Picture 1 (cartoon, rainbow, N blue to C red):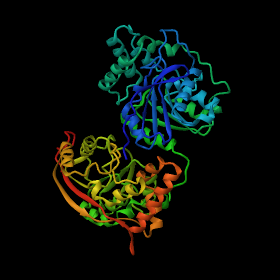
Picture 2 (cartoon, rainbow, N blue to C red):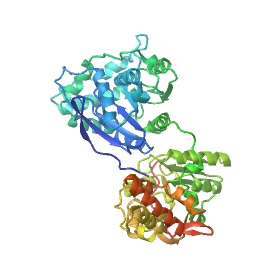
Picture 3 (cartoon, rainbow, N blue to C red):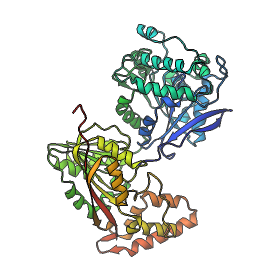
Length: 554
């Protein structure tokens, strides 16, 4: 399910200063605090990167350091703080969001913040990730000779255009000749960065004038938090031996080398960085068991044969399955595409862990799973012959953007086959669960990105698909019941794994929640049959074709 992309920027009073902060994802998820390098405002942790991390069940926080962006600024050359103060800022932001232990991702010079936090405040640090940073040992290689020649002279801070040119040239020089450097995107980002700054002269100067007064208790060898070191193999400022030395200095740390990256984290390499970070920040938990997860495959047992037949997977098809859950539809596609492949995409790490285990047990070799948000993930262009989704495409904040992104991944004339719910009032499972738990028949207010009925209206959905580049759009009525267990006791445990019941109960006091649970038990008992507990449902089977042409490179 896709969450709202951003909370929006907000100013927080922390340690006596104003810090501008923006979050992505659900606060209940593990918190990942992105700490930029010297002179970097939050913008340099690009919004798309934040979205991609948040889509993998993380609560992402980015912020403006003092003297960057909208945060408190000091006179140029007179920073009123040390690196220990900046570390307190980072930990204060975690506290402001109720996070006791966060995952800190620290870039470049402000790897020092991670060092101080990891050594002096280990109780606040769930893990550390150092990007393009160093131990600072004198024996490590200096910056490459070309860097000084390629870095321009400091600009006049009163000339915004000159500052932008300086930043673009500096970023290019620090890319180390990376093929991933994008001048147009960098210039657009630099312009926004300069425009947002309270005092760009202070941004350019003050971080380089601060005192490094920590840690108080040791060095990198005293870090106990799980640590990931990320370093580009083209880094001209801190060549790769700096990352290797950092890996060697921190007990048990791991090194991810980004081939083709300089002193940066370029977008084309996020497909490597994001999964590594998600694995590194995963909560400690055993592998999921089938009984721990809501069993959508059982719920939809009456729908599945119809859906499988409608997909019509051919032997050579490359199939994309959106919102694959535990992977039943992905595995069925892989079995049919004997000379092709199937890729299942979902945002739930736990569901995908289960899907991978089931595929491994079955011995399928042409199936893969990807934890990603299909609204923003960069799929290979014009790659797939068929996109399928069994009730997995309703949960996106921007449906036109989602289907447009999916369309880019499809070949010309590729087919789209979806199952989506019809309106709430035509789905007894939804109305009855809500009436039992909320005590009223009034439907809840739909939340963008969380509405299972967002594609219920055929005219609206047809317009969405057409705007995304699909034609030959057809709707077929599907009237089948949904299954929740062999008896009411099993169904009760099953239903309480669903998100809406959990959310409703979480808003109630103890007495109200007890009444709601009793009503739910009675409702489930009333729907029991000799074959199990069923509720009526109505869905649309939607088929369409991609109308686009192949890219010029195809």
